[in-house]
Amino acid sequence: MHNIKLKGSDKAYIVGKIVCLGRNYLEHIRELNNEVPDQPVIFCKPGSSILKNHGQVVIPAYSNDCHHELELAVLIGKNGKHIPETEAMSYVCGYGVALDLTLRDVQARQKEKGLPWEIAKGFDTSCPLSDFVPAAQVGNPDNLEICLKVNGVIRQQGNSNMMMRSVAQIISEISTFFTLEEGDIILTGTPSGVGPIQSGDILDGEIEQVGSLRVSVA
Ligand code: MG
Image (tube, rainbow, N blue to C red; front, top):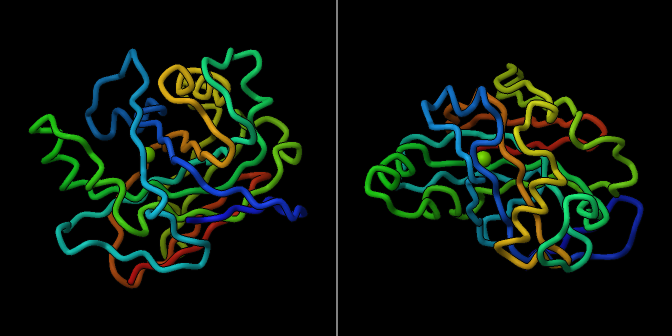
């Protein structure tokens, strides 16, 4: 089990489920030749996939193509089901920087067969997380610059204002399927520029007002 503490607070949140949104940035949908979904694309990562800031990513032996996806992470502060969009932001207690590491070759095979993505998305260390900051410290989560560098070179650069669904919409929609509980984390999708990582790479993710995340690849 993993705990998350908000900067400047002693309260620890025990991480529950990690709910991820796929295909939330148009340019990223286009770069992978995916269809624009009319329903949100939702999947989960297990808690065991979390990697702490400054940790080391281990790419499983069953893949030859692990991709980075830098994403804004939302920490849920209270329980709710069927949360109206207008109240959704009151359920957010913090924000962090996350990577949704994806075994693209494995995911492609699973997609082809119509099978679930978990083995491509939920392996150990597939969810690096930064420290989290209190929600009050972030002005507008739907307008934050997002940048990922690999070995100092910019690979992904975008803004959360390019998300097709806002943070409030995402929370509201997810809560129609799953009760959101204190300590749950939502990954809000990735901007374009995803690409492979390899042994020895250093990944530096940064989100305006939220913070930074650094991991290396074993
Ligand atoms: Mg993703």
